[in-house]
Image (cartoon, rainbow, N blue to C red; front, side, top):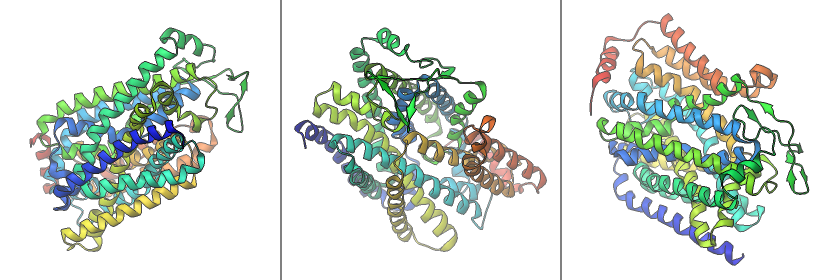
Amino acid sequence: MASANMQTLVGMAAYLLAMVFIGLWYARRSNTNPEEYFLGKRGLGPWVGAMSAEASDMSGWLLMGLPGVAYFTGIGEAFWTALGLFIGTWINWAVVAKRLRTYSQIADNAITLPDFFSKRFHDKRRILSAIAALIIIIFFSIYASSQFVAFGKLFGYVFGAEEYFAAMVILGAALVTVYTLLGGFLAESATDLIQGFLMIGALFLVLVFGLFHAGGPGAAAENLGDFPRFLDIFGIATPDTAGGVQKLANGVPLFGPGADYGFLTIISTMAWGLGYFGMPQVLLRFMAINKTSNIRKSRNIAVVWCFLSMFAAIVIGLVGRAYLPGLLASAGESETIFIHLSTRFFPPLIAGVVVSGILAASMSSSDSYMLIASSAVSNDIVKGIIKKDADEALIMWIARIAMLAVTVFGVILALSDNESIFRIVSYAWAGLGAAFGPLVLFSLFWKRTTFPAAVAGMLSGGVMVIVWKNIIAKAGGVFAIYELLPAFIISALVIWIVSLLTAGPSAEIEAEFEKAKTAEF
């Protein structure tokens, strides 16, 4: 291995070892009971709550997927996606956070999202938690695989050989599993705080140096102006490709005339923001904040972080195309633009720390996915249905075994189809957002919501994502929209209609609902 690559690897290794150390530190506190392990005994302060929610949300998508889209097809899709996510982040914190924090505690101290669904509707048979747990296992395995792909792309580039991809996917997954397995939710949240700062610091460092090397904002914009519709938020650039690889002429990338980004496409792309209402990794942070009075401060921190980080990520993709226009010739390759800029601008050791921002993004998300999936198996399926008298020690052992199983399955998915991180994330995001998002909103804000409607809404949202993505969208035209939008609407309609057609909730459920509206903790 070249000396420069070795120095870069040393910088990355130092960061990884620090994360594992944090896991060992919190292992002393997080292994006492399931509430401590899965929810940190609702002890997150405003900074940790905000940063861990955003870091676990954005994932490797922020430093690889989003800049990659901006690099390959211009500002259009990246801008509307980011705008939808920003609006969704703000509404989620402003509307959902406080009510979910109070209601989850009033509902017999629910410690997971599936647990909340069953306790909210007094589902003694735990049907809701079982369905939700299965949905989480399916889509979080897909989600985790996207982060393992990010590990593989990053380390494969550092080592300078594609054949290292599989080994690096496994190594990255193993390291995340170690500190999450040991330290649970507290380790995950503490590392997310550090990783959130590292992510935004790395983004702005690369952005500033990228603008300098590209000759400044004016020169970069002038260069990109040669590519049709590249800087048009109401359009999208169309790379001239052969077999998925962009053609070059004397080192200059070739583009078609571009295409309009119409109203329906904009609404479809902004629908990414709807996903927030159903994201367990974010909603769990709302449930874990120590005081409802801290939620406003957490919201302000989260919204500012979200805006700045996505702004920097998009501009990095654009500046990367201006500075290295013909380097990356496919959508998948484009997702490495952050790595290329980092290793060109900084000495190898410093570059290792900077590209650790990608590790931070991927680790802060994959640890959440694995912990939530393991809680779904141990707390919501085993204790909730199979063995209701299981003691705390058994539940925690099952959680660890489940975490290993989810990790292995995610690695297998990552190795079986090394495709765009952006596209993998969009599918899993849609599945979780449509299955849980409408139900979360109805559960928190409509007293008339019934148990049968909750079951029907969750199933219809999750199934419709799969059907729309794999069957209906293939018809093209108005049907070729992001599957989250129609699936979310259908799930909401199903919940509303079925609630009106079935017997109303009990007086006890209604009393809990009213209490949650004004409670403070």
